Length: 576
Image (cartoon, rainbow, N blue to C red):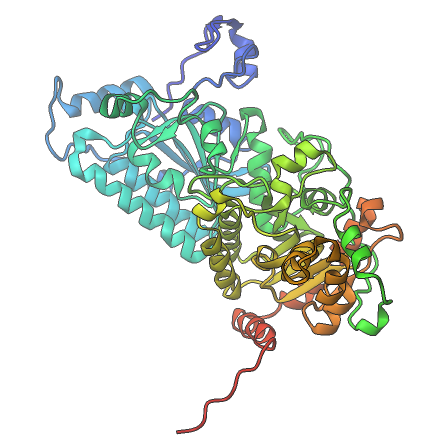
């Protein structure tokens, strides 16, 4: 059936701010209020027209000439027969069901798209919607192209009873097959997405995006208030609320959806950015990407490095103007998109991460972020000291990288793990331990660079890697010099002596075999020239990845294991 999208009236009143908007202007702004930014609902067809390249949309059902069957498995009747409600929904919307599944391209990048339409029985999940979502997933699997799910739903379809409930498990299984096959899944949550859809395919994606103000949850606010008697906080269950609690990756305004989705899809193909002027490709200004230059000479033997004062190395490693992980991402990675949250309860600002193209090849970047030189920003970033949510966010991104066959790059600059009581009650030790185990078994290349401070287990949780490098002015230690001095010297003023005794600077780290190489810095240090520092780090990263990419997973795991086994004795068991 053809979608019966109604023509825009001459004037539209915004449901949020009550502003009157000229209908043609409302259409030009993609049904976003120009006064307050409220995002109006789109039909499935309008959504596909907005996201997909013109002329690229091909319905999946047309491949086999299929039409949805009449589904009334229970012979259900409330105030009206279910069959009658179905016929009415089809007549009013021009749709066969609450979802439209198509193949198409987004700025030239192929994808299978399943777009839901709230007009059709509240976008409810029933047998036919479950069938269509499952078919879309299997088509994505067969074509080996990403799956994009656009959700808008009130939940499971009550008129189909427990059979509708089974669609949650059915669609979850279909997405699990994509996980096993390494096929990217992106979810776009639109308003509203509740119940069975929220608790299945809407939130099982590798990347979860949401439009501003979109609501997502299992139980709706009215049910929660009636059941618990609790007053809900302002903005409860909105996209912004969920982002702040680490449950989704990003909130993306409608006008930015096409370039954002295209950027994510391009990362799977390793292609470059969209051509300038491509529809919807405008982005915020950012530093120029540093091109891959001549090979960077990474120092491999300690004798090539000069003797230096350990305390001076500590001071330089902590310089407030040293580049952060965000600075390196801005200078090195094309199409970088930061992903947020641990998908459990929080988003730690001391850790950033996301996919991007390093000299044209996809990587998953994860790094500590101390904040800029301003004290307020450094406080907001916890001075680069990750909470359990930060380590769990990193673990989630590493698993995504492993699924997609994408190398992991970590940039380490932290005084250590967050020592606060909330971090401890949140399972700080467990989160670090889980990362150590996870990184030891990642089936993709892993390269770590200590760009500043490498503080104890909080740094090691990002450094179980195939290659561990350190910047020339970086340090790596079991404890801070101040902490060591206070405990062993009983004198905080002995920190310089403790720094020397800990052998924490680049020359000693290389001599001890803790690191595999030392990355040079600009003459005045990384803090003096961020672009030059990024070029040096980027060159070292690319060289390491060029070496590791051809290795099979078994070799990566075996050599990574052996790398860390050499830091101790392992006696051979006596033969029986």
